[in-house]
Image (cartoon, helix red, strand yellow):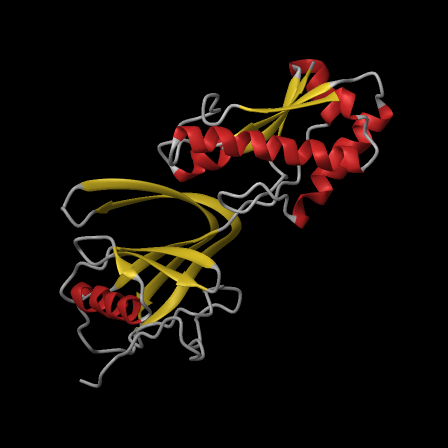
Length: 270
């Protein structure tokens, strides 16, 4: 039997696929005995990986990002017996060669890097001695594009506060990143159009690391936002900066998605 090789994360052309409209990641090759017969792709979706971890314990992990569901079926003209173990070992070898890691005791769940994204990949149904088909689920972890925006005026009138998730800082830093300009420009416009409004700018962190350090960091980030607003012509007497560290989470800090939501700057009406 000739040797079958799965190549990932290398500059190797993707083998031809059964459907012209099927979309598979460019870094993912296939085993020659199988063809891609069905696929689904979303620019953003969430998927809960259900697998046996390295301690053989049933584990669930939910991730969000670019999502692929790829269905591979045995080619009708192929007479080779290809076991599920052979399939899983091929993907395992490719991931390890690409400096990724195996997360499943059955060598069916992996994590690796592609460009700037962390990729999670689960192989399902590759278990038979003469496998006729299997499915791969892939999440390329990424942030969702936020298209629906709550008007600052409406939110402050209704709730008295609004979290601004479009203000960005590097990890453990209080320097505002350039990609925050869109969110901050909206806030400046609101404050100029509503000159009688005074606000608190409140920094929030997740609970990772030392509490005292996070409290200080949250105050510094709030102060950085106030300084930005003053530089754009907003009277400093209308603004008060403060930070509460991890004291006011909006959700659990136990998972990364929760920690992301808890890291924020909030505008609170005085």
